[in-house]
Amino acid sequence: MPKKISCLNNMDANYVYQRVNYYNRLNAIKSMDASFIDMRSFKRNFRKNVYFFDAFEYLRYFSKNMKFAPLFGDITHIPDIPCITKSRPIKGNIENSVLLKLEKVRHFLFLKDNNSFENKYNRMIGRSKAHQEHRIRFLTMYINHPLCNIGQVNRDKNPQFIRPRMTIEEHLKYKFILCLEGNDVASNLKWVMSSNSLAVMPQPKYETWFMEGTLIPDHHYVLIKDDFSDLEERLNFFIDHTDEALQIIENAHRYIAQFTNSKQEDLISLLVLKKYFEKTNQISE
Image: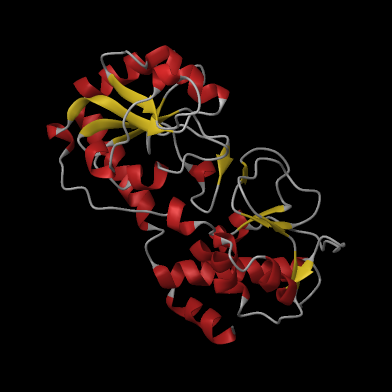
């Protein structure tokens, strides 16, 4: 572990610790309870879970005697004890929600888009499962709108909203891509912001390692109201104002770039865990 952390000397330490303290907001020493498990128990109980592999990638650098509280899945509440989570609310006293880069295979996909914004369709594309009330409400409002090609891909309810699945490559033909939160964050937001299309969404309520809480409306993405009522107005504005659209795309690419340095990402992950063990009084600061 010390050897891994030594690479901090070659990086912007202020930036690294800014992100460490964003993910891990623990300040005072926190006591452990029966919910905490040690590394050996974690390995036995979570061997086949994708969260296990993503967490163990960094936990393995620490003593097997270390204890922690994993809270995996789509987490939208704030736990009573310090937990390692993939997601958390953006607002509130969230210090017990310590973020780690989990479920990477689904959430951290970046791409190279060879389609220019100017040559894309003047419409918004959107495909997702629609189990949540807000997603169903959006489909109800815009399923037949001429500016939208949207639909649900689950077939267990609301057959009037079912549309064929579409590949990412097919999505990239559109100027606008819908990024609605589901159980927690919008899982497509990362690759959409790395594309030459505009992410369209209300201001996010949840965040992951991607730090959705730091995204700036109409700077990194196209903001729409929580009730979705201004969608047509917002799409038409950016259809008519290409320069403004291209600036948002450039800003989004710049935001994405901070997650592409693998050595820096590894270091930040290790320091987040180191601080977690320090603040649970297991190692000295």
